[in-house]
Every structure is written in C-alpha cells, then in structure tokens.
Image (cartoon, rainbow over all chains, first blue to last red; front, side, top):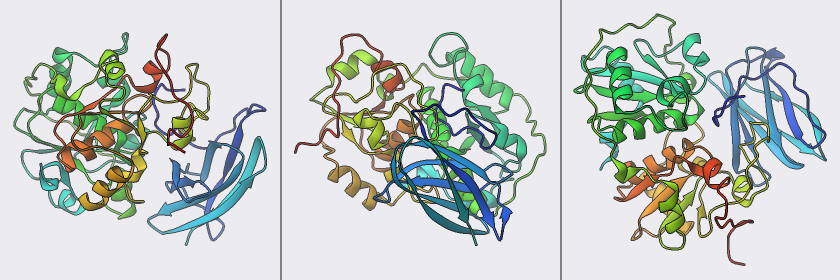
Length: 99
Length: 281
C-alpha cells in the first residue's frame, strides 16, 4: 500500500484478517453499477468517518469497527444511502441505491 | 486574508480555463484519476513521486521544487489553481507547499475534483504540455511548518489541533477507515490537543463551510484564538486542509502544519501520549 492517507482504488478482493471489520458493497442505479460515486462512511451519530470513490463496477470498501454505520453515495446522477450493522469482525455486505 | 484571495469556485474555474496566466494543477497521491480524465488544460502533480524526497522523509528541496515547477510550465507570476481528489487534501497540502516555497498567487478550487464531478463539469484526457519555464523558489518559510521538538514544547501552551477522526484521536484506530490498520506506532494523541476532524470544515460536496460556521466549529472545540496553533494528522495532508481553514480562511496569523504528524510523533521514544476522547468528564 502507499504511505499516504488517500483512498485506495476500490474493488478487487482482499484477505480480511480475523480482527478487521470490513463493510463492502456496490453503488447501484436501477440495478446498474455506478462507478465514480463518492461513498461516505458515517458513524451512528451521522458524523463523517471516511470517503472513497466507487470503482467502475460500483464497488466500495471500508475498514471500520463493530457498530452501526451509514454509507452514503453522492453522484451527479443522484444520491442515496443505506444503513449497515456490523455485529463483529468479518465482511459485512451493503448495497446503496442512488437515484 | 479573505476567501476570494485563496479560494475559487468551480463555476469561476470553468470560465477561466483559457485565461492566460492561470494554471490549473491536479494534485493527488494516486494520480490514476487524472489519467482517466482531468480538468481541461490542467497539469498533473504527483504528491508522492514529485513532492516527496525519494529517500529521506522530507520534501523535495528548493532546487527540486524549482526544477519541478519549471518542467510543469509554471512561472512565478502565474495564478496557480490547485485541486484534487480526497476532498482536496493533497491539493491543500500542495497549497501549503507552494506557500512554503514562496509562490505568490496560489488558490484552491473549492470542493476540488468532487465538486467538479458532481456538477457534471467537463473532464478530458488530452495530454497537457506547457512550455518549460525558469521557476525561482524562495527558502522555506518555516513560520508555517512545525517540527517535532516545537510540537513537544507546545503541549499545554499552543492550540494543538488534531484533525484525524475521533477513533484515530482516541487511539482506537491508527489510520482512516478506508485503509487497512497495519501501522506500527502507538495510538492516541498529543496531550492537550483538541480533536476537530478535518471533515468538520467541509460540506458534503467537498466545499469549505462558511467563515461563520468555521469560527463556531473551532470555538466549540476549545480553540483559543489568542494562542499560536499547530495542526497535525497522520502524515500532514488532512491537517493542511485545516491549516488552510484556520490561516487562509479565518485569518489566524500564527498557524503551522506539523507534516511529521502522528506517524512521527506516535513513533518517538519517550514523548507523552494521551488516550481517549481527551475531553474532561
């Protein structure tokens, strides 16, 4: 990985260690993947935590912690959001519909 | 310092893409976004490979900066408009860097690449070649750059503004939540630091909040306008964003960016570290 704090390219697969809580999924518009959306991870109080740009296949991924989160996508074609609850470490899937 | 001197809107930018003496530059750590489509006419600056020394942990030196800007076709008289991804973090870092080496007229595109894209403004893949210039830089202006000893000496007497997320501040996470948590240094924050995440200064679309909103956010966090200030994060780019808000937008005079930031401080032997939210119960 790079030394910086910039968001990495999204998509692909990763080996998730047993201690990490990963939230990942796709941004979709009417079922079609939306690339280039700005996907924001908000904590349970609605506070901004992180942001990535979805891959051409609409993929995004966050390394979070157990708890309740909101993922919100912004795109020139529309915005949308979804809630996800991560009970513990592992991969938690979530889809965001934008319109 | 007023907002118009340091910040331009996406609308203004689109109208001034062809204006002589105005140079747009996209700055990012990962420059694949630029390669996939950039603001027409904008040059690319690679934060990692062009602004950082390849061996030591430091910036390119004065001569290196002169060489870089000359090769990019930027002259001393140009108005340089910086923008980038990641809510302009690296563009803000570059802005601070241009100021460090004494560039006279540099501004940020408010909202950066995000606002530009959300507005549906044009991007193209044309290769941008500008005639080489002979750029002349100043010695580093160290009134805006903090080093570790000064940071340790500032505990309890200057505003130390930690702009990382609350979980990084408390010591729970060692990096932002879009990155794997693999760093080796200790978690926590510099004692007496206040936590104002960089994101508080930005709207959802990446533009800066109004001066009134910004003043309220920092005052609420316990920022003391009568004190000198040092901002830090993990590696110094998110804190450039806050440095910009505090010094360039709100006009606080003595504000430094600590580019060593937590990756340096959290690895120092023997320095004090505070854990938790830092707020008195």
